[in-house]
Length: 344
Picture 1: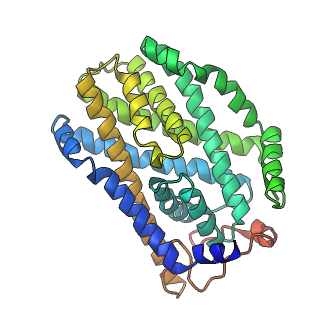
Picture 2 (picture 1 turned 180 degrees about the vertical axis):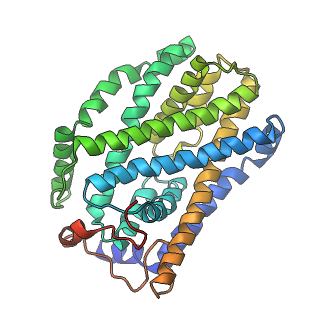
Picture 3 (picture 1 turned 135 degrees about the vertical axis):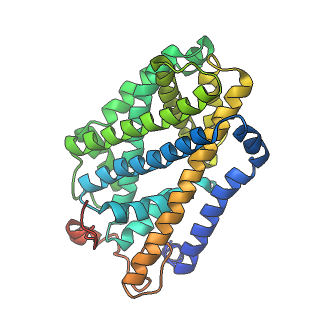
């Protein structure tokens, strides 16, 4: 295991990770290009540009939700440093396996003196926050969806209270410490607070409203009636689709499963052909947003490494910087996140 961790921390492996992850994101778009090109012709350019901008803002706000959890657990990072870490690590979700973005975030976080166990805890909590807020919105959307969808996804109504209880700070802190104890890791140095969870949940809700707006904008461009009810359906439908796609971890970034759920939610409002156009373009634009922000994060990481006077490490830190071992990282955890740009 020690040799494996040493290999994963090498500059060569980090560079390969970035290349493969970004390549997988490009392939996710290129593999559907014939269908994409046909779909592009059915929607005005201005609508597409606005939908892409919404996709970029959606990913950025998702980062702010993750950053709120990171701050609450004792690692305040600037927006710039958080963006570098989050955007580059997140392109790892396009690689098969469902864990590469988490491993990348943990390794990159070590460059910012964040204990690896804390990085994993942050990702786990931010995912739970996303699931709970998504289920809350999906529960309302299921009621507006066609009858078949209500029968198939009615489980969100009873699943929501279960996940909601898990998000209560005393319960969540116990669960995290139990997981750390089972993996023979020290307990959390900074327990989660209600304020931190509320901040992360607030940003997560904003992100769902933005993603739903992107879907709604595309759907109304191909014939869906632009009403508050259809917007609510688009928001909840995307939130439900994301949750189902996430739970199918063997599929990179939930490809296929997410589109099937979102398409089912919209089918009562649009014809089958229009539904295909909307779900396809929504996915492609969100993938482009991940790709653009991942590239931007890699550039920021290289500039940061260059300003430190060391050869650039594509995943965030000067190559001469020794990552803090997990066993002693807690001692430096209270000083983490001091970035030259300050805490924003």
